[in-house]
Amino acid sequence: MTTVEERLKILQMLKDGKISVEEASELLKTLEKSEPARTSGEPSTPNTQRGRWMRIAVTDVETGKAKVNLKLPLGVVKAGLKLGTKFSPELEQMDSTKLMEAIQDGGIGKIIDVDDAEDHEHVEIFID
Image 1 (cartoon, rainbow, N blue to C red):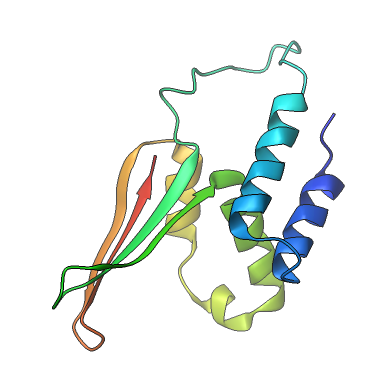
Image 2: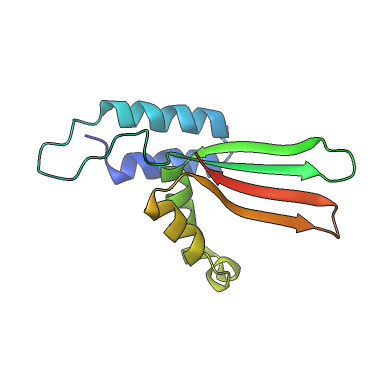
């Protein structure tokens, strides 16, 4: 069974730069696949109805070119937000509750759409 410690080890390796985001994602997917099926009466929802990924897209408004197109498993995002609030006062001051609520609701679609006029960027965050 996948333990919290295994997931935290992967996140620590990512933080330390020992593995890339893609490698961390693959490791977490592998851990997910190795978990036994739910049999304890826990509610189960088909994967097609719940978001499993967070996608962050940053586009240069002037050129229309993508600057960032990042896809992360929601488990990594949840763990990162929890860890981040413990170590960063700035993140604690941010209103990350809306982001966590959107993740926990399990909905799919765009949750953030921001135009940054100063840096000429368009930032979108999706749950896929």
